Amino acid sequence: MHTAAVVGTGLIGTSIALALSARGVTTHLLDRDPDRVRIAVARGAGTPGPPPEPVDIAVIAVPPWRTARALAEHQRAGLARVYTDVASVKALPHAECLALGCDTTTLVGGHPLAGRERSGPLAARADLFQDHHWVLTPTPDTTEAALNRALELVSLCGAVPALLEPPDHDRAVALVSHLPHLMATLTAGRLREGEEYAVRLAGRGMRDATRVASGDAALWADILAANATALAPLLTELRADLAAAAEALSQLSTAATDPAATAEALADLTALLQRGVEGRARITPPYNDPASRPHTMLSVALGDHDRPLSRLLDDVDEARLELDDVDLAGLAPHRPDRRGAGSAADSVGLKVAPGVARPLTEALRDRGWAVR
Image (cartoon, rainbow, N blue to C red; front, side):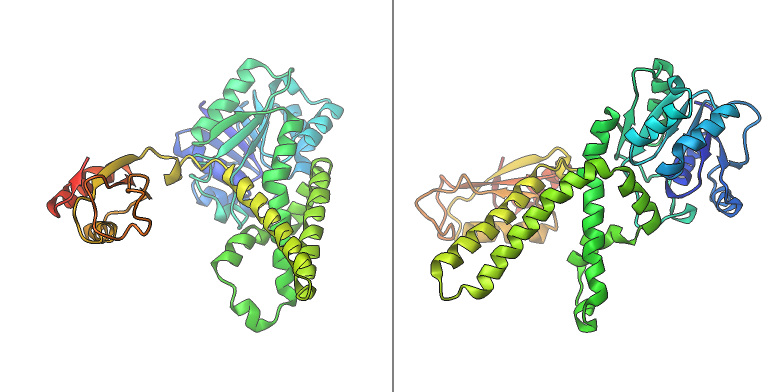
């Protein structure tokens, strides 16, 4: 890929342009708002205005409701040989493209699953997509050459491609993106009516849970409306869960004199919370998350030390090296408190990053531990 055009210089479009320009791709920037183009250009995202001849790929980075019309306009003008978009819904824009007579053989629907709570070209970053999924939704009409060009775009931006059918994509993002955004926004909306002293107590948990609520309200209304078919059933199911939680809490607040009702309500509430624990466990760690990286397990014999586990962990702290986990399965079962004098049979496993294994082994051996 040598040349590209980005139509729409918001957060996503400018971030794509920054990533491509950093990889040596000559990138042309187009937007109805000339000030946004000027800011993107000043940030090094590319060259303002249309290219003198068709580019290798054009990225349509406008809201979902404008995607089809923008594609039709730029295909008529011969902007590029291949086109993709970044709309966060796929089925509706694709249907609109067909209705407008767009050439779908050169079109690969796309959606990079990355963003920030801020918008506009000033918030753009060249590494915004690094190690994030980027869904592509080719159809039977899409040529192999067009798909390969879109895959090259994803690679140049440092993202991880995933191929889905448009309806499958829309159901997926309704669950993992649109529903969480709506819930974060509704939760943040409760803060408007909160007492000032209560809002002042908001900590990291509330900030994390409502971070995305700072997004552009009009843009997100458009996104949610465009994916209403996939999102509405999820809200119906969630409404049932909220009603069950409200009923359980209502019972717990009034059933103090009825132990059986209290126990049943507490069991119902616990079951709802446990479903959340199990659902959260299904999320795959990001590609750059330490939890997804290889680890080394060190086996340390506790021997005859007094309070061996406590001493071992103190020695690790003194070495200023970080543990990712401790496996206690090697401790003798006859001593449930694990704190008395050790025996030759006792050992623990220390899970560490590969780069930590050697210095930690040496530090512990210097302190008299047998490490394998």
